[in-house]
Length: 306
Ligand code: CP
Ligand code: NVA
Image (cartoon, rainbow, N blue to C red; front, top):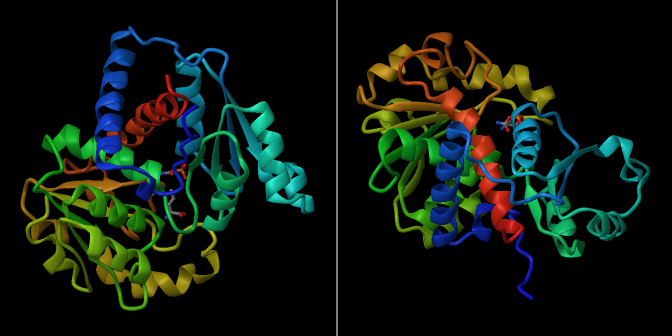
């Protein structure tokens, strides 16, 4: 028996795991388009235990599981006994008796860790306040498609040092590409995550405050909302602080003409990104969103040992 594998964060994956997932997701996408996909997960069940809203992650996991022949079950946390304080360790053991794999979207990273500890089935982080690992896997898949690879590429993050930024930092630590984050003072990424990555990372990972300096040699420019789920009360204050960090035509002029733009979505037009850039030629956001489904299929196949 092999030990079950969880994806609590990207630090659970080796460089070889990343590469296998990229290769497999690209193959699954091609097979889906050619109409030659197989259904290796027939009889398997994926639970999606979500405490926060989701369009892409939820539907792409559900559709992906269905495409693989398996069955997804969406579980809103508020409709479970967890909402009435049933302990996580009890919920985890019971769900392990019904399901084959469990994806969780929640606030506290500790909820994912506790589920992973007490579940007999693989647990996938489908976004926490700290990380969004599956997002960055599909984002890197998009970089591979558009740029031919991430090695030697300058990847840039503009805006909040948030959950998605943390997963980019973890990815850079394992894969060794250069990552520059431009964030306002007070909204830098978590210091521990950053230091750990800088110590491990083969590529240079740096945080600066100047977005213009950051995009100078960029191959990939990433951004995300200024207020993440759970930060709604800070949204108005953040809107003021983050103004210089908008990805707009002016900023794009400071970047090489070949730079691509990514945004995990949902986007707030004219806040972190302008309509012009989001819908412009540098933007790969719709392919990026599509790729989530194929990456999720690769993840499910891998964790279920198929
Ligand atoms: N990018 C992403 O995770 O989107 P959803 O919140 O719609 O799942
Ligand atoms: N940082 C955002 C990502 C949404 C997919 C949030 O956590 O709300």
